[in-house]
Length: 165
Ligand SMILES: [Zn+2]
Image (tube, rainbow, N blue to C red; front, side, top):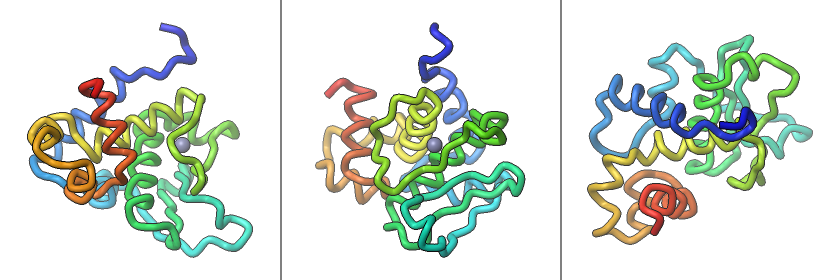
């Protein structure tokens, strides 16, 4: 495997650990609860105008995920799960100058392997494979979106990723 390729098997392992540890059996998954139980602070913050294009970021020194309080709820949820992914997968990088905040307009289009891993971590944590198995054939994507409390694009990505559908 190339060093700059996303390591999705590692993402899958780390997500599985959390799903096991928290006995996640029914949607929706609450990344705020999970983060706080893992002793990571989550702060819904009023960002100053110069920072308002930011959806959220992880501050490794403060061990805190800051999320833009003006962002819409489904995006806040995804952002927290994405930053939790950086915390779990990329702690050293998150402390470095290479770390990048998550922008509000930054939908899931990115070429950076760490961002791809954090997006995959977030999507797989919020829409666990075992739970998606239970529902994806019987519910419409809009219903799945409500059930899992993620956006329709996240649901579509998960279905494409897991089943190639
Ligand atoms: Zn990121």
